[in-house]
Length: 295
Image 1 (spheres, rainbow, N blue to C red):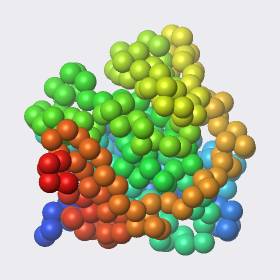
Image 2 (cartoon, one colour):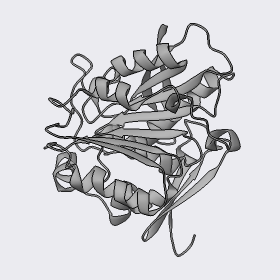
Image 3 (cartoon, rainbow, N blue to C red):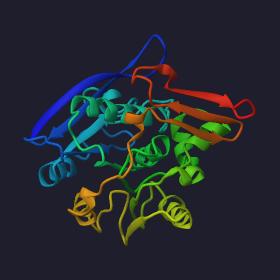
C-alpha cells in the first residue's frame, strides 16, 4: 500500500479558508472495485489514531483509507505532540464538513473508484462525526461504524467546549434528534464501563431510536470495557471482529450526495440548516442557517 498526505482548503469564511491535512493509505492497484473508507479520530486525537485499522482494511478489502486532521484537534492544535484541542471548541459541526470535504476531494482525486462502496468509521467524537455525516450527507454512505460514540453534547462535553450553544446549534449536533435522516446500516459498539462517554445515554439510546425507525443496526457491548474497549478488547480487535468481507463489500444502491449535488435541509427548531453539496469544498455558502418561519 502507499501512504499519502495532502492539504486542501476547507470552507471557513468568505475570505479566509481553513487548511486541512489528510492522511491516506491506498492499495497498490486502484481499480473500479476499489472503495473508500473514512477513519475519523476523536476529540484531541489526530489523523494517525486509527492507522492500524486503516492498514488492515486497505490491504485486505481493497479500500482507499482516509483520515482527516479536522480543525481544532491533534496536530492542528499542537504541531509537535499532536494531542489536545482548542478552546472554545466547535464540537462536531465544522469538523463534519472538514471530513465530508475530505471525502469529496478524495473522490475527485480517484475518479475511477466504486462510489457505491463508501464507508465511515469513527471513535468517540469521531463516532459522533461519522453519525452526523450520515445526517448531513444521507445518500452517501454504505454504512456507518461508530465505536464508543458521542451522540449529542451532554453536560461534561458542553463544559469542555468553553463556549455557549444556541438551541439550534445543540439540535444539529444531536444524532438522536435527526436519526430519521440516517438511512444506511449502522454498526455500534461501546464499553459498558466507559467513564468518558456514557454507554447508556449515548449508544444504547441511539440503538433504541434507530431500531424504532426500522433501521438496520448491529451493536456490541463489551463488559468491563472502557472508552477504548480495554481491558475487554481493543478497538483494533473489535474492528476485525465486526468487519467481514461481506460487510466491507456492501454497496449502496443510489448515487451519493456529491455526485448529484444534493440539497439537504435539517430542521433544528427555530432555524434550519440548509446544505448544498453542489458547492465547492471551499465555498462558505455550502451551508446556511435560515429561520424556519421563512424557509
